[in-house]
Image 1 (spheres, rainbow, N blue to C red):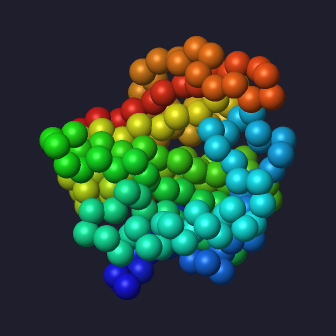
Image 2 (cartoon, rainbow, N blue to C red):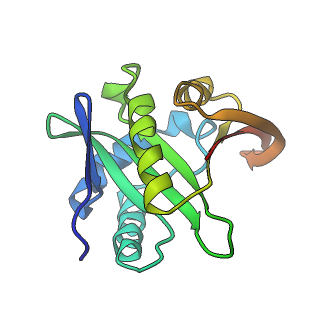
Length: 177
C-alpha cells in the first residue's frame, strides 16, 4: 500500500480514510435531515464500508479515480473530505471536491480550512487545472465554504436532481489554475 498521506492544518489533520473510520464517516454523511442538502448520502454503515473499500483499493492504482481523507481534531474524526472524478488523462486534468462535517464539529470553519488545505495538494499532485465543488442550491453553508476557500460560482443547475418527487437545483463552484 502507498504511504499514508497526512496533511497538517491549523488545529486539525487530514489523513487517508481507513475501514475503522466507517462509523464516524457515516455519522458525518448519513444524517437523514441532509438528504436534500447533499448530492449522495449512504443509507447505512455497510454502504459506507463499500465506499471506503473502493477508495482504499483505488488509491493503490497508478491513476486513481479519487482520494479520500478524514478530518481529525485531537484524534477524533470530525469530518471527511475527498477529491474524486479525477480526470488526469486526455488533457482534461480536473477533479471534484466533496466534504462533510460531523454534527458535533459544524459551524467552526473546519470545512473551509480543510478545502483550503486539500485544494493546493490535489492541484500539485495530480497536475490539475480545475477543481469543482457541487451541492444543493439550498445548502447555503456548503456554498459559503467554497466561496471562503476561493472557489467561484459558475452556475446553478436547475432541477438537476429529483428526491422524493421534488426537483432540486444544484450549484457548481470551481477553482482553476
